[in-house]
Structures are given as C-alpha cells and as structure tokens.
Amino acid sequence: MDHDEVSDDELVRRHRNGDVSAFPILVKRHGSGLYAYTRSLVRDRNVADDVYQDTLLKAWRAVAPDGTYQTKGNFCGWLFRIAYRTALDYLRRSPVQQLAGTIPSGVLSPEDVALAKETRSIIMRCVEECLDPVERSVLILRCCEGMKVEEVAEIHDIAIGTVSKWVQRALAKLREHLQQRGIDV
Figure 1 (cartoon, one colour):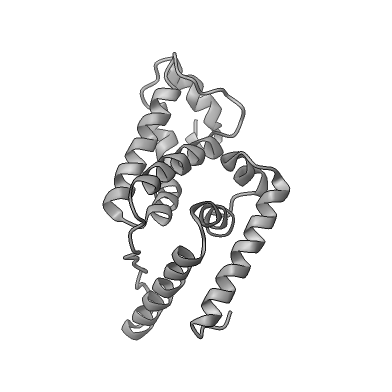
Figure 2 (cartoon, rainbow, N blue to C red; figure 1 turned 90 degrees about the horizontal axis):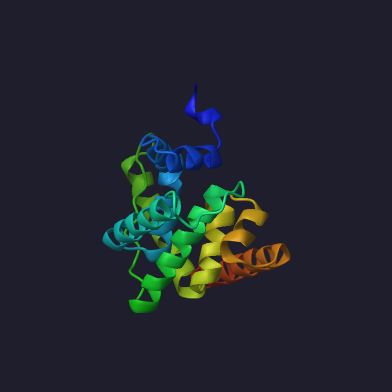
C-alpha cells in the first residue's frame, strides 16, 4: 500500500499499535514544511534545529499509546501548533536572531542569486522588525506554507475571521515598512 494513501490519523493508530515505521512516515510527510516554518519563526539555524527536534519529540510522546494526542483528522495543524508554541517559548527566552537565508541558485545567474538573497534578506528583516511573533506566524502559515484559514485558526486557537484580519494587517504593515525602505510592492 502506498503511504500517501494512508491518513495521518491511521499512521498515528498504527504507531500506537507498535508499527515502528509509522511515525517516520509522518515525519517524512510533514518534516520539511515544519522545519521551514520553525526556521522562519526563530531565524537561527541552530535554534531552529533544536525547536524542530523538540517539536518532534513532543509529538512522538503525544502519539505514544498512553499519549495525549486526540485523533481529530488534522495532525498537520496539531504538529504546527506544537512547533509554534515551542518557538514562542524560545522567543520569550532569547532575542530573535537575524535571518541568514539562502536561495537555491538552480537557473539564476550569480547576479540574480545575489539580488534575490538581498531582496529576501530585506523582506525578512522587515517581517522581523514590523511584525510581532503571532503576526509573523499567521502570515507565514497562510502565505508561505499555504495553509487554510481554518488550519491557521486551529494552530493559534483563534477565530477564523481573526486569521484573515491578522493576515491583512500583517501584509499592510509589511507593505508600509517595505515602502519606507524604498521597495514598492
């Protein structure tokens, strides 16, 4: 059976019944998006690694046979919520680190890569400077990760309408901040 056809909750059930291959499938399915999200929140690669690993450990414990995870059909949202809370715990303890982002150079010229990196760096600095952690998280989940409004609302434990308002407000603040730096969007 193709693992893509198996739901997350079925994999959790299998994990709870002793299938040692089930949890790694969940990690493979959601890991890259989760890591990218974690990295965008904390900005520091080493800290992102720690937050990511802590998130996976918390998830693994929660889906254990005696764990607290309740099967509700939205494992991905639940997992991102753990990452969000873990990252916030870090942000409360330590100042947010600067982005040292990279952009793949596949078909871009060296000059285009340099320009793209600089533009991304400016945008991410503006996101960091003008948005608080919650606004940053909502914006990244909705616009970069492509999550549905309902999923973002569940992760943050807020009303669906609030997500849309926060995304609009975050985009407006970001647009204004970028324009103050001479970048038209």
